[in-house]
Amino acid sequence: MRNRILFFFLLIFFVRNASAQNILPTDSIIDYSVSKEYEIGGITVSGTQFLDKDILIKLSGLSVGEKIYVPGDEIGKAVEALWKQGLCSDVKIYITKIIADKIFLDFALTEKPRMSSFTFRGIRKGEQNDLRDKLGFIKNKVLTDNIKINTIN
Image (tube, rainbow, N blue to C red; front, side, top):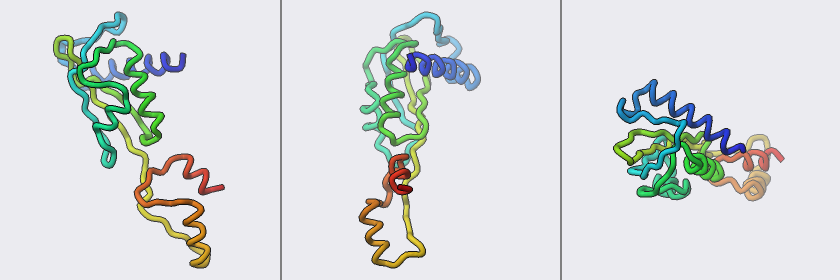
């Protein structure tokens, strides 16, 4: 049920953006009241700096040449699969264009912040080394909620 609600809101967002930004040509208007099958003609990834785009596409579960229904569950499942990785703080999938029965998608992702450096203040050097070992901090590692909670604890 949650997936259907998420997918519904994504579809509303797609329709609003498509009309506001003219993402789709005027002859390629999508009727969301009727599910239609499309072949994925291309997938791009935007908004990432450190993550490999090909791996993100694989993790989504979608691939070029695959047939999907719009509206359908496939796009919602792709969003959920990317969310579950814990690498992104925001996941959006846009329809960039439609040519005949081919649909082109863009994954607009926002990467979670990474730890560039860390310091300890107010404790001796020996205690700093012990804390480093216990916390397992690694430079350029994605800061997940789990790391933040473990650090606080």
